[in-house]
Image (tube, rainbow, N blue to C red; front, top):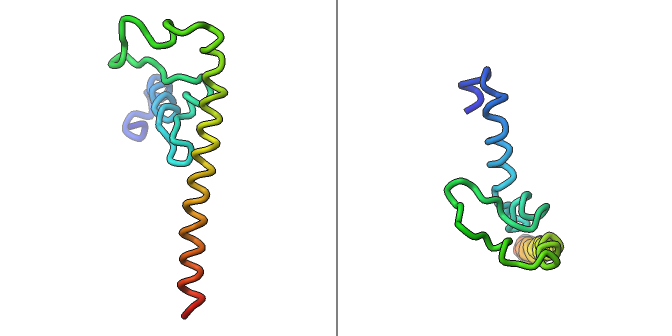
Length: 97
């Protein structure tokens, strides 16, 4: 995208950054934007008349990033355990040979 239009980098960069920050990571199962703000951004194609956040009390909105980070931490730990089990099985299978 940028390779084809290097002169338009200043116009394309915000969209590229938005795409990167909204991509869910395998390790956390959350996007960087969600972990920082506690909600997914409202993109043009996803706009609704009333959003979920407007229906929540402000105190609950402030807790969302903390809850998202805790979920991400648990997800990272679960993924770690999965990889550790695979690694241990792999080591055992090679040590028996």
